Length: 407
Ligand code: PMP
Image 1 (cartoon, rainbow, N blue to C red):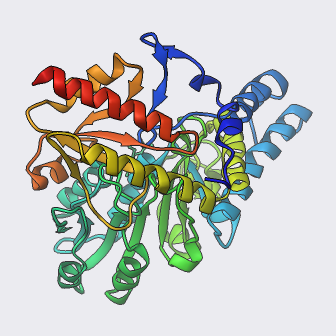
Image 2 (cartoon, rainbow, N blue to C red):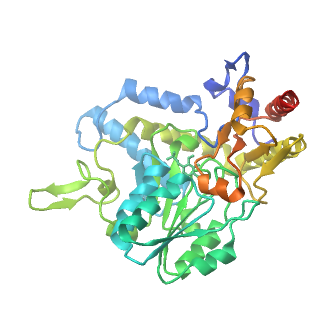
Image 3 (cartoon, protein in one colour):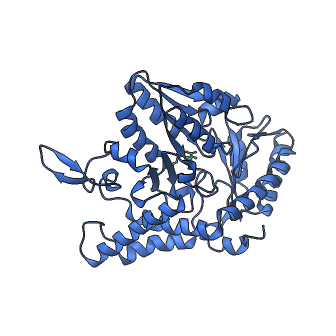
């Protein structure tokens, strides 16, 4: 695409410039985690070499500098998702912890026996298991929005699942296994009509789709830094202030308190109420530079480039002998999942790796989805801003050889 200068962009990613098994690395595992531009790596090193200090309580210069950098990321995240205020941005370890936080606080406090929680058949295990835990503890019921064989959620069925007992709906913005972009705005509207709160798992949206939590009107939104060109080990939970305020704390410890006595402890204001202990300062600090990187490229340009790669890859890969593309939704992020008749995904993954091509194989932490589609797993190639059509040609050539060899 004209809007992205991919060659210039690639120069910002040190990890891409290496050989794997004697060939130039082709990195197509971006849905699992994407690579980090130099500015993010520099920000990590810059923190540890320049101003490593514990935040919020210190009065010395380094502590003030670290606190300022940490809080700047919160502000950047607020703008990134158009949250009404920075106090509604809570730093977590990532999407998994964000969902667990909501399940363990809002879920345990407000879901009662006989209530219902709705998720979908497209969810990652991290948006299934936390809700199962709540349902088990509270004797509540977990209901599942069905998915078509094309990988599209059935909204008519969703409407019939909603009831006055629905307390929480939790779905992803985009599927990590199939790439389906879900009509979250409509899903959110319907949840609210039924009086439920709704959480959106944005793991696969963060680096690809525009996110405006006020326009969406979602109650909770979860992001992982490591899927957005940022470091592992951090992410955010956005929550509407009124909900966050009535939720009990998640973990107890330093920072999340106002005053502690053995008789009674009072909790800190938002967002600190949910940030017990020393947070992951370095990674949060560097996360800002990842969001700025995305902002500079522009989500529309990113989406256009990845869509072009997806269309090209889908067309070429689906023509190969025995290949079946899994997930045929009209709206998709840059995820191409497929199976090859008679060859186990794992074997394809290994043989592609021998050619320097990194893909993911297996159930992608979505076992119930695989079961519903009647498959064990897929091969998944997922694209990012630095990928090229030439790399897709290499994938296709590799697959052709593997298919011929295995015949
Ligand atoms: N949800 C989806 C849709 C994901 O793709 C992932 C990561 N594979 C997660 C949740 C979990 O995110 P994390 O591992 O960053 O906590």
